[in-house]
Image 1 (cartoon, rainbow, N blue to C red):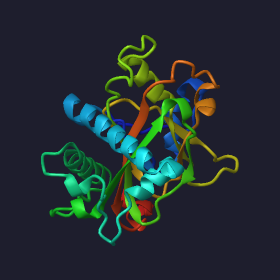
Image 2: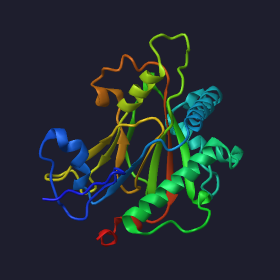
Image 3: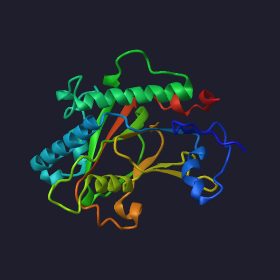
Length: 269
């Protein structure tokens, strides 16, 4: 019985090759049940750029809440970033984004990660042209004290998706002795991203891969893979007393395309 994996933590399957032998091994093997792939990138950006992205998203979210308190939800903040035209540009971030801005640097790094993933798995790199206009990215900001999660969903108009977690940065109140950067990183890891088995939830399928975010880390996966973010209670059994300060910040990106480009298993064999 053979299991495939790589040092870059790409987990994929050509055929059903192996099953987890124990619960302790499940976390590293569960994706071998998927006709799918996930690619993790650590230390994606410089520490300064990562922390600037965290601060930028929080500032824009706070400004949004002040102007629209009656719809101050994550979904409302997402709609606030939705383009008015068919061009997938974020009016809140792209409009003021120069080539040296943290948001532009993130978009370019995301495209590089997409290119690496497609090249390694499919031997099919991205077209050699500027694709920043085909990449739509947005920020999600949740206060740790009132985090409710995000229901299962897919992205039907995209071929690849990613989530980037900027470094937690600093606390809201520097005088709060219960808050520290390490505490914020711990709280971030509790808000897990779960990827579900694309073959359905009936036995013997129904597996899932639970990704615990790390600051300055990026995860890439096919847009058709059902995913969701759990609530405090689901992730930590309700034991979230230390996660009362700060924000959970993430940047999601979708590359426009057709699902067939990453769902045809013939491409993998």
